Length: 422
Image 1 (cartoon, rainbow, N blue to C red):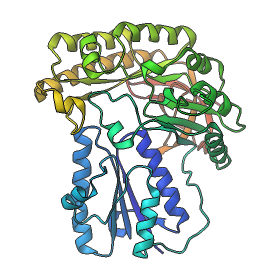
Image 2: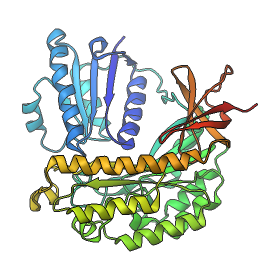
Image 3: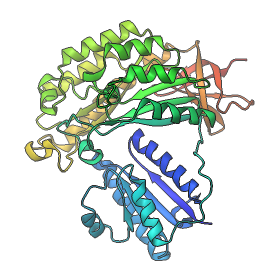
């Protein structure tokens, strides 16, 4: 019996790709292994959005040299955004890797395995569902070409899947036990513009909302330029659409946004936030921020920090700018902000957000919240609220995959704790 080991880093799209890769390998007759040393096939799903992610991938690849030396028969494959059209260069950098295939290019892997004679006896394909939640990509690629971003160069231009195909996949996931689905896209709210019928994300949400057995719907990541009134109204009116929207702002200064080629001004973003909050009561808003973009002054950074404090997001994912080969910013802008300054700015945003999140979560103490239980962590059940807050609670009853009412008695910036209600 052949075994595979799958290592993943990066965004939710990578996680979704890995879920499909695991299901594909399960269907081909492979079984998951606990470690690279116990596997016949080792696959790394890579990310290069930031230098820190690429460094981790490189470290993992270097560690696999010893695995290959100990067992020359093990097959090693690399996929994800590190893989571009220049496979020869990658092969030169990592000669111990046997096969390179880009995101969603499972056919290339199967062709290589077949040529190598490494396909075990095929079994009936079974979709791997290990949790009550699942990611479903609905639009691949990105047409925006923000000056800092490598995604369009690695995942290509925007391509939406037909609503019927997505609905069919979600029905099958629900049949196998999934209760919550997150719709994915680099710009998920741009969904449908390239399809003949020109549906939008609101149409997709409405269609999926009618699927029996599905309990919750989420989507990410959104772009402010595509967050339409129809989408906002759909989240407000559909009972399965969760009151949680991720809307990356990236910077709180107009000149920095212009240099990033984001296509909106801070004032536009503020108005959009006000509209969302007025239409969706109790909505949780999260965002992404980049600090230290080339040329960002102390004053421009202060504008970003002030915006974070003003809007009071439920969560802020903050990253220090890192040069990505091939992007416009790398080719045309000097990375003039020194690393210590980037780190200091990142810490300031994180500290401010921790205080904000603590205040938001503390208001939930004493309240009962609905939690979809995803599993156990250190003996406690864990799951998330409709507003995507992580909740831990103890209960001797098996709660896996269930909706539980939990009364919150403790709150931190990033978590809640409570007692299950009977």
